[in-house]
Image 1 (cartoon, chains in turn green, blue):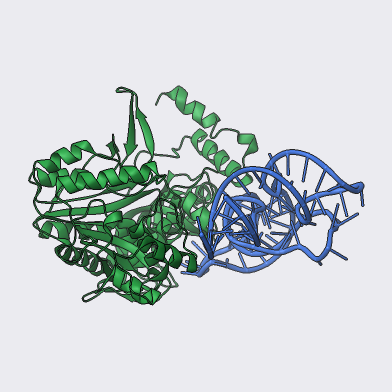
Image 2 (cartoon, chains in turn green, orange):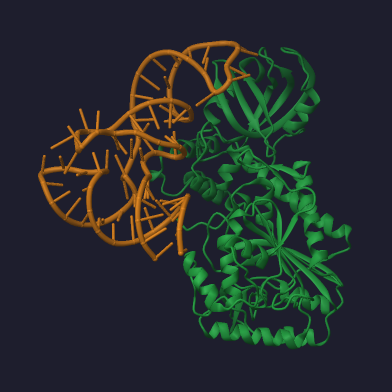
Length: 507
RNA sequence: GGGCCUCUAGCUCAAUCGGCAGAGCAGCGGACUUUUAAUCCGCGGGUUCGGGGUUCGAUCCCCCGGGGGCCCA
């Protein structure tokens, strides 16, 4: 930076200085005053020999009032500040949430540096303190300063630490949430531990991680409305992917027999406590696997993740209740559970008219393009899902709604597909993949007809995907699981709490 | 998409029937060499989400719009 720029910044600390709230104006004025006094406000580097946690680990047992004899430099964000005359206390915080008190006294740093500490430092600032590790008269582990320096000034005040910010403020300004709320930092670490656990489980089973296109000329692999975008160079309409499935299957055709991807999908739908327009998903495919082997893999992924974050397959949810993800999970069939809930036999052969009548009875909305399979699934979601609290694999879904799934080997009209439900939300899905290119083409054609009838979630015919499959695809099992929902499953949090920076409407 | 609730100081929230817009924390000035949400004295701080209407007078009532939450579809 040139001197000219530096002086310009000193003169105009922030735009619209006149209109600033009082506390920002005062902090900006301090910034300018410190700079004009020749001291840096944002030095490139400050003294720091130890993290706060390291000091605590090394000297946590120091007796009340004792001195350690060790001279250190620590730095951190000022979370509390108390001025007791010729002595100041400040509590510094590190990124991992650990805190340590520093004491600045007239004897230790001199009257001038003490006065500067009082006048220059605000809550939220970063400071560096050099001095001896001691224990205060009240037994608080501290660094007794012999010098100090400002490490970075905060121009905005911290929110009050003793009350939670509103949910909206927490989501809109996650950086502030992270500063003041340890639980917010914990979620970030928990999510990282889950992702790491997933990769370890996959690697232990010799799955290869790949990245497939997010910008696609044709969206597919799921039933959802896509985001559209445009590529200038090719003057081409592109879609943000709604699922990686069709590319991962191309990889299996090519001989990547065990393959997985953990990455983002985009669905142009609403946002609520269980849906985010962009969400992270795990998908995996295994040649010579099937929906049973994928169920076993999925259970292992979830249980290993629970062990990684909770140390147990029984996790404690945000509301304090325990939830058991351990052991084998129950398995039911979709038509069987629906029949039981409806009090009458319903199969893939049940006539549409009968299902329409049942839908009317239970206030389930019926769109004209719904066939009997889609209707049965809608009824299932209304009548059965709310009661699926314990982890449950629901098996054998109608062909009509399972465009990419192999026909069941013994039950007519259904496919080898399961959905995994946890606490009544859908956590994942698994298939014996459809690998017959002729049937796949027929299913795509049926989807095209549904699209023509008004179903804007219907899949489009993907000719290149069919071409790949026509080269021969081995019998394959596949699974998919929402990463954000897996976090929800092991923590009990809402989806917007599991995503670090969820989309919010502009203010 | 529909219904209900909500938006006030930096943050979290009050404000009676429509009658001078308040508190706690935070901030500013002062005191204090051992504080732990320190204490004591003093003092500031507001586009009450935006626009319009009713009224002598609107945070409050009405209309339109926006953000957020919950429930329903």
